[in-house]
Structure formats: C-alpha cells, structure tokens
Amino acid sequence: MKTIKHSASYALQLTTPIFPINCYIVKEDNYCTLIDCSNRGTAKSIIKAIEKTQLPLRYIILTHAHSDHTGDIQKISLHFPEAEICIGKREYEDSQNGVHNIRMPIKPTTLLSEGDRIGNLLVQETPGHTNGSITLIDQRVDTAYVGDLLQSQGGLSISGDIRWLFPFPAMATVDKHRAIQSVEQLIEKNSPKQIFCGHGPAITYIKENFDKIIIRAKKI
Image (tube, rainbow, N blue to C red; front, side, top):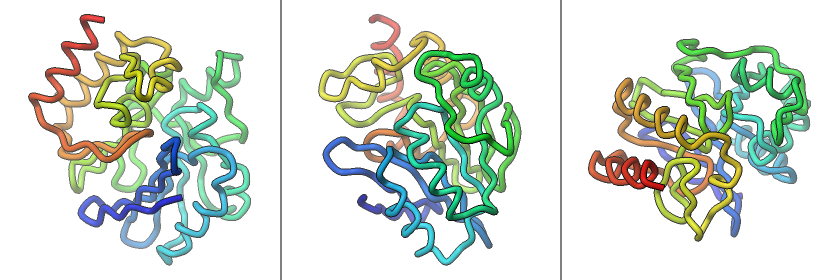
C-alpha cells in the first residue's frame, strides 16, 4: 500500500495500487484512529503504518460494511486488542438482518449515531451508498471522511452516479437520491475544506464543482 501524508489534516491516507481503495489513520494528541480497513490482504501494511505513528490505536471506525472497507478488521483488531470497533447503528442492524452486501465480520464495541463524537471526529449520518453509511468530520480542520458517499477515482461524483472509468462504488449504491441529499446536507452543515473518500485522491471542496456533480446526479 502507498502512504500519502496529509499533515495539515492530521491524516495518513493508505491506498492500494491499480484498484485504489483507501483507508485513513487520523492522528490525535496521544492516540490515533483508523477509518476503514481497505480490502482483505492489507492487514500487514495497515498495521505497519499505524505502528510507524508511534501512537496507540484507540478506535477503528467503519464508514460502512462493504467488504472493501471491512477488509482484515479481525486481524487488525487482534493486533490492537485495546482498540474500540465502531460502526453506524443502522449499518450494524442491516448486517444482522441479512441486507445484501452488508457484512460485519466482527462484533463492534460501539454503535454510532448522528452527533456522536470519537475524539475530534463528529459523526454525521449520510445514507445513500448504504442505508447506514456515516461520515466523520474532523472539526479541527474542517475535513470530512465520507467513505463511498463520494468518489474521485474516475471523476468526481456522488454515489450512484456511474463513472465508467471507475463504476464500482455507483454499482454498489442502494439509493442515489438519498446520497444526493446526504451530500447537500454535508456541505450545508459543515462546509468541509477537504474531503477524503474511499476511492481516489483527496478532494478540495470547490462550490462550482459540487454544484455540477449535484446537477448531473439529479438528471440521471
């Protein structure tokens, strides 16, 4: 995995080659948080990157429970047994009720809802890609970790709006219209300066660009 430092955002972005899947290490004053776990087969790289921070891992947070985000969470949790495992309450409920493609391979310790806080990360419920998708807002620097609500790989787009250079997040989306609403609410509530997504490079928020992708998604 490639590591990209975003020092101004307290973030390390870990991304797989060829088929890009991101997860993130967010640094706090005396610990760190892992957001998503990439795909299977990446545990060693993620563990190594966490250990390089020289900070204890206190939380593992999943934005949603698709397999390219849950990855090797069991192996990572076994290596860091003190880390709390967190996921949105609705997402965990769906994983227990047999909802298509929603699988939680390990029992969480904390279920998250709108307005909850994990360190400096504020939880916002952003359904659309899945029913229980969440976004984490780092209010220190107005940064949003959105999972697959947005993608930048293959072109900036909202979940459900297929970009044929990288169609996979859109094809796995449960409700594009709810995703559009979640993006609009995310911008309205938080005015994020930088957005980190599950697939592709970091996104700098530019109003004109987001107006375009919202209009495009609503037309299709």
